Length: 160
Ligand code: SME
Image (cartoon, rainbow, N blue to C red):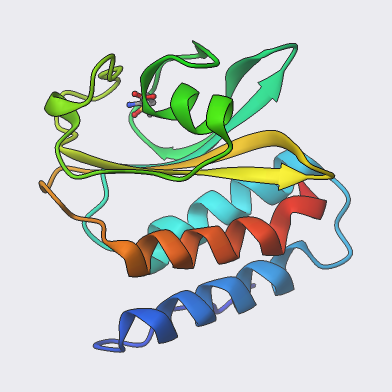
C-alpha cells in the first residue's frame, strides 16, 4: 500500500515538491513505463485539485497517442502541432492556457474543460511524452503549477 497524500492547506510550491518526491519514490526500481505512468497519473489526480483530466500522451511514430490517465475517456491520437498537447510536443515548450476556447485548434476531449496545462517530457533532448492537466475552472493554472509539473516531468523522464 502507498500512503502518499497532499497536506491540507499547504503552499503550492511545497505541494509540488511533495508530489515530485512521491513520484520519484513510486517509480523507483520499476522499469515498466505503463505502470509508472498509471501511478503518476493517479498521484497528480490526488495532489492537484480542481482537475477533470490528468495524464499522459506518448510520442509514438511522430504523433501523440493516449497513455494512462485519470478522467473521462479521451481522444486517442493527436498529431504533433495540433491542439494544446500537439503544440507542447512540437515546440518542446510548456503550454499554459487560461481559456481553452481562445486557443486556436484546441481539441475538446471533455466539454467541461476550461483551462489546460501541458508540459513536455524530454529525454535525451527528445519529447517522449506530454503531461496534460485539464480543469473545469478558467485560469486554474499559473506559473507555479507550470514549474511544479515541469519539475515532475524532469523527475520521471527516465521512468516512462
Ligand atoms: N485538449 C487537448 C486534448 C487532450 S484532452 O484535453 C485530454 C488538446 O487540445 O491538445
